Image 1: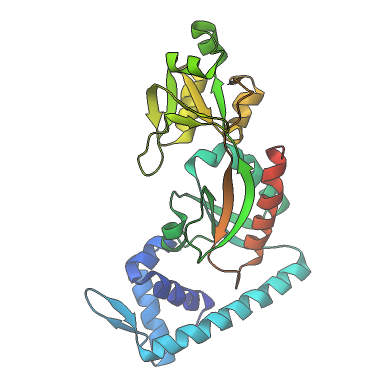
Image 2 (image 1 turned 120 degrees about the horizontal axis):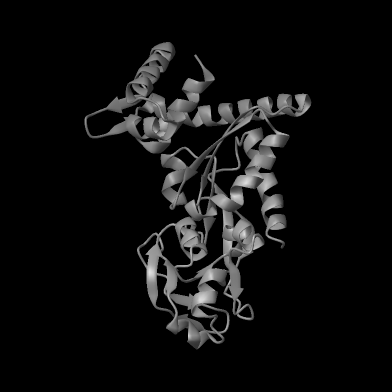
Length: 295
């Protein structure tokens, strides 16, 4: 009986099906089914009622699941103690992050792996932490905006504002707006939120300005590249364009106007049983990202 199979059993329970667990762990469904069958055989007990429409725990499975959670938590704590002594953390951390945050995260994660070369990082794009943490078996996810589900642990990383940017080439060709009302005479590059809403009302701390969208995308990286390419003026967090700002491929427009702040969170399902590699990465990001943003 392997610890990996016991963990697999708890994931199947949480996700409600062999298929969902297989997708979350990048395993063939037949592999998941076989391993659960072998676990039932080793325990000499049926853990699930299986039908074509539903998978649910038997009475034995229910009792075993709740006891097993405590056992696995103790096992993880014991393993962490050994790793603390050896000072060589080993393991895998599966992280969900926003597609538009790749430029900011990549150098931070590279620095982390220089410190802990034995820790493997598995990164997944996610736009919905509430479902993706379970469906993709994420150790934690990074989320911007309000935290809707109180069933998760949420730790604030920073408050992120946005600025108005354009490329030097665009400014040379079209001129720079002198006032907020001038923005309406320019081509705007707009972000489209995951729910489909077009971000063409730029919400500043003092007022909101309506812009004329010439180009839109639901990926901030694409928006950034369109602004750098001179297609128009855009409204985005500087943290998502640090390299372009530092190289002066992007110039801040109307810098006296600040946007309203939006909180960025690090979210995970439970404090219990968190692995040492996951804990190290969480603590590292909570320290490094605000420092990188100059906060």
